[in-house]
Length: 385
Image (cartoon, rainbow, N blue to C red):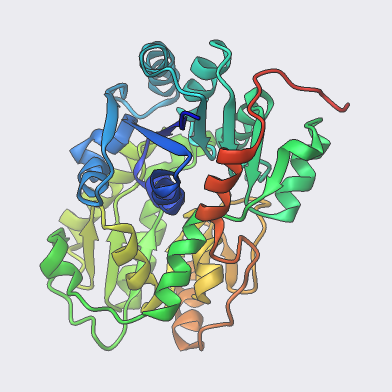
């Protein structure tokens, strides 16, 4: 029997860490063939050139799709997605996969779903069923309705996908593959590298070995005009904190120009001495950095997923993760300098909390590969409204 060809499309830096262990498990499975497609901002140096990490990790790339238009506003998001549909349609036509796998909820992932579904290719959606608000939620639920098989990260998400009318037998709680990486870190938590020495970046050469925080704050697509104002509140709080800080560049979303401009303007005018900025980091190194930090500040889903498992205090700012399931490690605050500052001070003084398995037990990648090898793959479905 020939191997099933599973085409996985990675469109951005965070998506790679979300799916890395599943890629390994698919690649190693005797009944599966991995067809890895890298697209979108994962190919761009401006956003960390995630493709370099992917290639260094030993994954052969079947195709690269350049589709991001400059501008970082709702119009370019729509055009980028349209271009993605056109380009990915050709990729799938040439690769002839037995199934296409799309990840989570980034705005451009709908292009993967449309290109596969319209060509009657079975579509697998990982990490559906969650809620956050903004364009991400619309895209996530749209991917769910286009998908034929749903590999969700929590029981809450599974129940929601079924409520959307999907066949319960096609909705499987595998947990989130990013927790697999976090599980490895739990067993080997030592920060065995110097982040600045290894990854360069921009900013001060911090004295971080006695403690530091990590900041990762992205624009909110429905609030993109406020992105510069939002990031400035966080910058002021972190500067006032005067504590060593490793800060990661934002995703390519509507408003990222405002976020980036806010960072550059603040850096030029205020010259913060306690912040060092990075574009990207290997997923394992990033998780080690998180595990050894005092807190994660910002609005990244890593705060709700990986940090829950790692037990890291999280200061979650604003509406980007609205209504997404969270463990006890998360403190929610508004876009307000004083709120952010006070909550971060409290987090630095706290002991790390216990590990939560709200998003999985650390065995998701192998679980996903086995399902893909054995489940019946279909491109039509019974709706259970």
